[in-house]
Image 1 (spheres, rainbow, N blue to C red):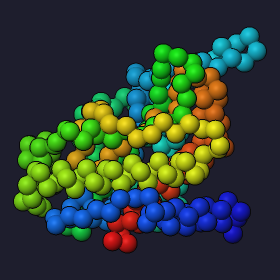
Image 2 (cartoon, rainbow, N blue to C red):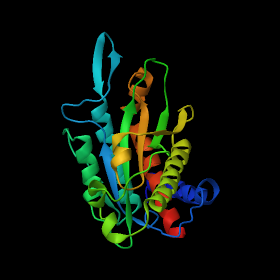
Image 3 (tube, rainbow, N blue to C red):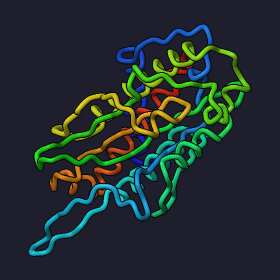
Image 4 (cartoon, rainbow, N blue to C red):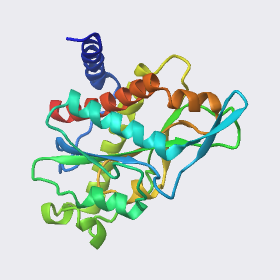
Length: 265
């Protein structure tokens, strides 16, 4: 067994122990989104004609453009690989595998159209890199859907996900359970990144927003801003293969901690 494999197993064990220490308990009379997860949809933000944020690094007298879409894709592929290695049997679906333009609607359609089964659920994780009006902004942050926003699970678009055919639970109950699961997923990933990333990487916390992919994906969903394209030090960190591996392992272990918490219950 390699040193990395042994280290990863120890890190995963620590993460699983943290379940009982840092994650909220969730009780629901109508368990749906808290069913064990069989499928994870990984979304690399931007792509194709949409480069996302564009940053620059300086090498000697040369200025080199770095594109967010490329970092997002590299990280998503590493996260998927780590998930498949650490959690055999999980199904990983990518909204894009290459430098392709995928609309926001198509991204959520890929996630929503993948069928639920009677005894399993799914989740959605979108990867981005941030940008700010100042070069000093740094760190990662995790976005979840604003708690005040409720989804209508009985609309045509969301019923395509299979929810309508599997449950008659009222919107209020489904929204309550989805909110609880999204909170748990967010906290699990945040805790894992805190543990896995180097000292000095700023944790900007869990934030709420109404991003399209969060609002329109019919499952627990988070959007992770992994750093800032407006900060050259962070760009250099985000294109470093060693840091990319640590970050992707942190996200993967956070997801697995969430998956295991559903089984433990």
